[in-house]
Image 1: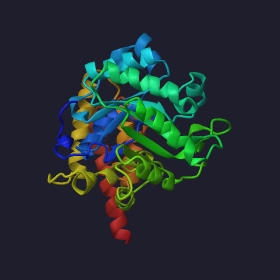
Image 2 (image 1 turned 180 degrees about the vertical axis):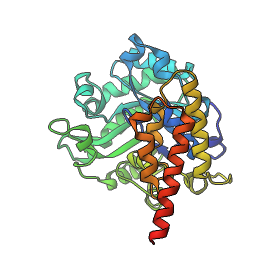
Image 3 (image 1 turned 60 degrees about the vertical axis):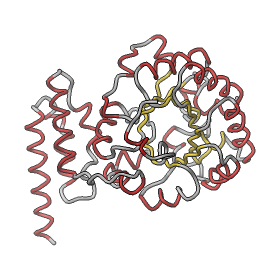
Image 4 (image 1 turned 135 degrees about the vertical axis):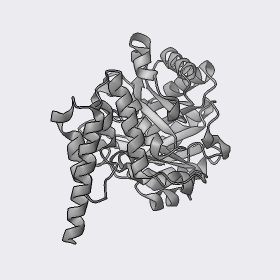
Length: 340
């Protein structure tokens, strides 16, 4: 596995992670997140094995060296295709390859992978073994605590036991069931109840495995509380919509003594990134959309977001849009201060 700063500390690799999120955690998003946290483990969006067999591999796998430590999440169910994806993950320099057994979307179900694979633990085990045989990277699995109305602890316990026997030692557990009929992916993140105690019990029963908890968690205190029970915490939408919540992670959880980042510096570095994209002919809004939460919780944040989101400015030079956004934020902040 590639050496990175995070590996200076033992057993810290999965201590705090940012979840894979479809249509969100693309390479531009991950670059932005890495400006805020240098050590948290980042994940790609799920990439189907079919896309890597038949599609544009570079489009799916290319990434910036700054993104490490970085995991590739695969979606698929055929051992040979999963093995191919694992080999590509290693060839393209990823630090981990993860198998998605938690996505409940209709499209994923039609492909017979994602959360529905929890009903076939031996199939998952076969895929994990094929991936492990094909690369030297850690092979991990992300899954739910159950599917549909199956709420027996034994269901997820036996799933983990079977897959662990195939060589997987890291399990990222979304502490909700996946309801495969009648709910959208968004509803599946909100309606099935959270049952953190199931994940805690898994750690007690499998002390030698690395158990990472995911689902509905926000804030440093919640992370710290979970780390008393499990090995790691994965944060999803909270990290995306409130990215500055990640700014304390390196120092508090990941052993860094480096100075905490400053929003102004992160904004400046992101502007340089956007300008480089624009110089290559890449529309800067494809990346700028990920940074809209940077100033959330501060005076003027709404006006700053509005400028960057204004479609009438999408063909303007990045520097001009940045100047307009900064001026709008500072003006709004000054007005707020005068009204106080």
